[in-house]
Amino acid sequence: MRKSVICWILFFVITTLLGQEPGPSQAIALVGAHIVQLDGSEPVADGVAVIEDGRIADIGPASTTSVPGGARTIRLDGAYLIPGLMNMHVHFGLVLPGAEGARLADESDAALALRMASNARKSLLSGVTTVRQPGDRRHVDIALKRAIERAEVPGPRLHSAGEMVDITAGHGARGKTHDGPYELRKAVRAEIGAGATWIKIAISGGIATQGGGIAAALMTPDEVEAVIDAAHRLGAKVTAHSGSPLATSEAVRAGIDCIEHGYFLNREVLRQMKEAGTWYVPTILVSQPATRPFFERIGSPPWYLERVESVGKDHWKALQLAIEEGVRIALGTDQLPHEPNDGTTATVREAEYYVQAGMTPLQALRAATIEPAAMLGVDKDLGSLETGKLADIVAVRSNPLQDISALRSIFFVMKGGEVVRNDRGVQSRK
Ligand SMILES: [Zn+2]
Image 1: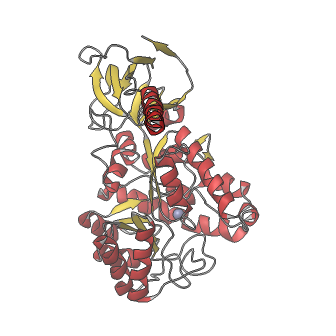
Image 2 (image 1 turned 45 degrees about the vertical axis):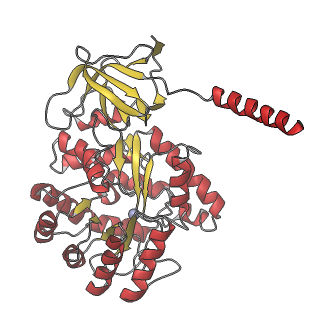
Image 3 (image 1 turned 180 degrees about the horizontal axis):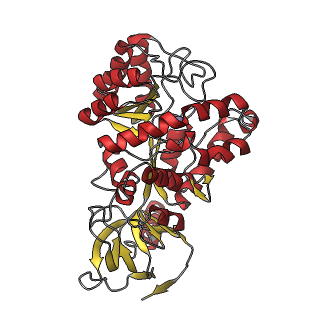
């Protein structure tokens, strides 16, 4: 008797709780904006994007796109809708040499996690809805990725490389290092086991390495081959920090997926990359004058500033050649996506530099959207504004296909159908 009463109470409580669960999320209609296409056609004027359950249910001109009854309407009159931006080289836990770096020297894991979560939130609000993290510390990047997926903290969609797989005396090597094919395979498997979907290695020296040539090839071909083979067998991709033509050429031959920075890449190696379909993430920002005030702000030491200047011209030339040769480029900054730079954000300034180096505005916009989506293997779901894709949508005030600097005017950000920023705040219920 008593048991059945308890059962009845439990049944009542459970059904009541279930009854309070929100039903299928309300449809949203973004209306009045131009829809920017990435296929070279003109933006669709007076467009409508209908969002249901986090995805684009329908998108096109108002005349042919029907808005379901009961949808929440958000007016974005005169704006231009573009896909959420993607930044492929971000360390949310970035620590650089200098005064700011010294302050963070004893940072605890808890403090690092909070700083990274704060950066992830700011990144999202700046219009960057997908980020690749090519190497952070103590797997906080993977914890952050999971926390964002569980909606515990706001942030972009993350693709993480876990900790960089370092060789002894390599660029950025801190703590544990691995040498020879055997140790490297083990290290790659450990990162993938911890949740990494990319592996990051450094095959040449770098700007932040004091001593050691940026153009030197640091890993032997059998080491690079072992890393790539071990990663590919487990379904992960490999990217390499590289300034060196020789190291890059060897890595491309071994089947690497992507090259970061490429400070000294020449036409020959870039052609090899183009032929092999190797991706290039230029992070041009790190060596160009627009970023100097940032380095001064964080108290970068003189040797660091000298190294930045010494690679700037070659880096710029490599980017120009890569564009000329048609190497597939995905935007990345190696700065926080939202870091103030030249009156805008690092992500937007990077895209502007691509146009200055020879891209059309369309190419630069693609490098910040559909190209990274293809590189990550998520272009079925992200990277363009099409029916069926996830609703990661950004609105700007003018046409970015005419002038890429239109990206400076981002005022509305939606991720997975959720409005995370709307500076106009013009919303009405139908
Ligand atoms: Zn980096």
